[in-house]
Image (cartoon, rainbow, N blue to C red; front, side):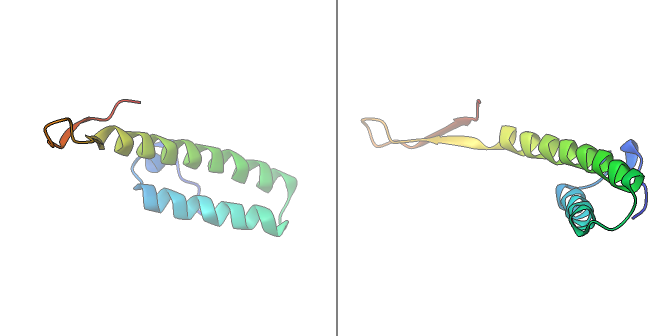
Length: 82
């Protein structure tokens, strides 16, 4: 695994970051490697997880909430608010 910097992680798409995170999880689950390798992989995984969460939050903010028809049968959309 190449050691991505935080800037490189920031440039990844959600799918790319998730693939790297899955790779790290696989390596950690295998139990191979040293404790230092595992700690470094866990730290990198935490950065990737935070990046994925940020991407998901950004996407969620773009989603529109569709409202049920009012008494007049009109369907409307409004910006999503959490």
